[in-house]
Image (cartoon, rainbow, N blue to C red; front, side, top):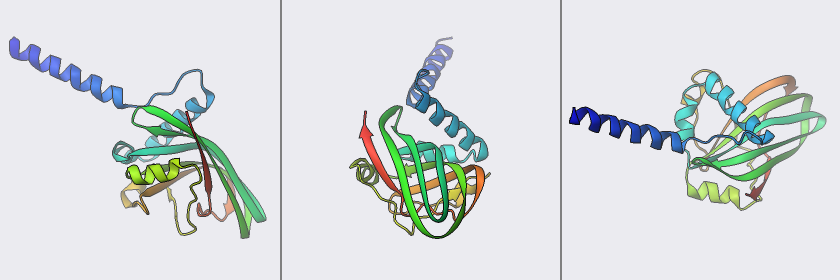
Length: 178
């Protein structure tokens, strides 16, 4: 009986500590609820993304990025930066592109930071995604082929629309600590 009690106590502590590490949105914050919904959808599309999120030092989630263009294009979205179980900042994304492009689309974007150096670089407030950075479109198992580039991994999920041109290079980000 004593062994059973000890096992149950240890299991309760483990479950409580694991649950404490999971980020949860504030129910009265529209952006946090949108981020939570985007995370759930991403994990449904590719369950192996959970391991990426668990291992990441931190991550930024943009639940809705609108992008459009005819020759000259642009994109914009608002999101949150999460570290452990806490929302540490609000962030925004903007992108201006010139070249062959046509259409419009809405997508979710997830930027994962491998370590403190990559996270701190983003948190300085004027981070820019290089033109060579590419995003992994989330489908079942897609994250298995993903890699960090410069300490950053980028995943996207198309929500709707059709656009000929789908790079994330040249994106600029603002960071506002909470």
